[in-house]
Image (cartoon, rainbow, N blue to C red; front, side, top):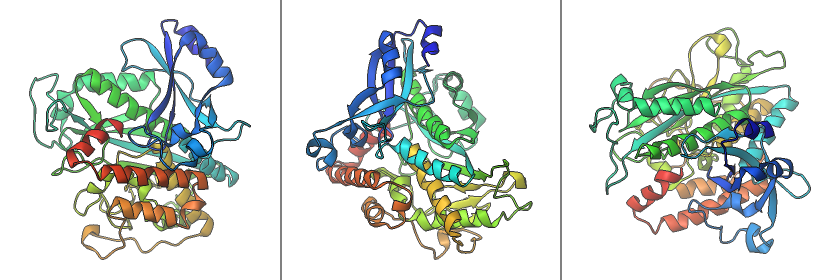
Length: 444
């Protein structure tokens, strides 16, 4: 890690940052001449910092604050190491960090450690998840009272229409996307195909599959930071909020995953289109945990505006082969690439908690040999099926009361997330819809 700064003497400052429960980067600015101390000894800040609400405020009744004296955690660099921050004017390096307790034990309230714990459970079974994520986001001109599509840097015009898979829409923001791909390469984020989506100024970039789930979550977290920072350099906003426009589809974060055995073979591949018993059991686990995990997939007030029938987002708990109206889709293609696509989450999620919930539920399904219901055919929106919680309060209650969630998440993280969301729900109720959008636009 130290070699990075020696190779880049132009870097005068670094940022050290960890993801809190909302996926917000929390950390410090440090002069680069003191970076060696951070690498060797770590840095400190209160454990409560990873449990702030969406405004960055303490949780009123959290035992992490006054009850415990607001004790420090020790934050150490992740294996990712230093990387550039291409959205800033001055040469600056980012060092991702995660939290440990004083004695060296991982802090259970850190979302990255939650994912690490699930990955370790796979490893004990000789299994390795392979993950790919689809990142949907909006480019938005938020300079006026009403949100709208930004003026194209190329044409100087503003097109107020959805442009699904439009090459013209991509070309209108070609300089932005060129800089975005350059930034991804500099940060070693495996950005693949870009498309325009169905919403106003909505785009999607796929991140390539990765056999390291922690790195895949890192990639998604860093990608969100990069896109939002770079957009501001262009004079507009980039937002991953679930539903900025009432009359257009929202942004999802679809997750594809398969699982390899010790020989590197896909345990979902049976040589045909249906997949193995292991695939069915993983689907069964995902379906069994879906209702109680809604708070992870839809963590904010705005999230539930997306999860409505007929909105290109799943609302029913079901699975299907090659069917985008279902919550779980088994894509077609070569049997060796047989995988599960989990379609519930919005773009506003914390990627670490998302992968923990998905991979954790699939593992429970594999361990318990959970048989799913029959796959559906046709339009899931018109069928009599069990549903994902339709509002924030129901999702908080389901997560808190669940007997399934403790098989995936630690008691500390469950408690912290519930307290956070109850506080946010209380204060969000005092705001108008436009004030809520203003909060979510830049944060999530």
